[in-house]
Image 1 (spheres, helix red, strand yellow):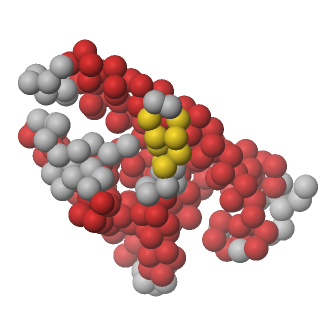
Image 2 (tube, helix red, strand yellow):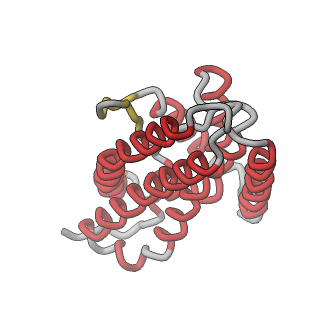
Length: 218
C-alpha cells in the first residue's frame, strides 16, 4: 500500500512533503523535551527494521496480495519516535525494494505516519482503562492496530481515486484502487488481532514497553 512515483500531481507531492516536514518537526521537538532523547533510539531502530521486514511479507487475498503495516504498533511503542522511524523505513523500502517512491515519500509518510499518531494518542488516553485488565488491553490493542491500518487504507484510497492521471484509463484505475482497498479489510481485522495479542504478551514479559508497570489481571 504505497503510492508510486509519477501518479500524483506536483501540488499533492509538495503538500505531502510539507505535512511530513511539520509532523517530523513536531515529533523531534517532543523527543528533545525528554530527559534522555537518545534512550529510545535502540528500540526505535529495532521497530524500524521490523516495519521494513513486514512490508516484504505479503498475504495473498485474491485478486491481490497485501502486507501488515504495523503502524499502530509503531505509534504505541515508539510514541513521538514513530513518525521519524516510519519515514526512514519508507525511504529504504523505496530505495532498496521499489515500494513507493522518492517523490511520494512525503505522502506515503503521511498515509502511514499520521494514523500512528492517532494510535499513540488513543492508547495514552486509555492507560487507566487497560492497566489492570488484560482483556481491556487486548481490546484497545485491537482498536489501535486495526484503526491505524484502516485510516491508512482510507487515506490511500481517497488520495489516489481523486488524483488519477488523465492519461490512463480512469475507470479501470478506480476499479483497481477500490479492489485493493477492499482487500485490506480482512487485513485490518488480522492486524487488530495481532496487535491485541502482542500487547498482552508484551505486558507480561516487558511491561515497560507498554508504559504499564502494574500487573494486569485476568
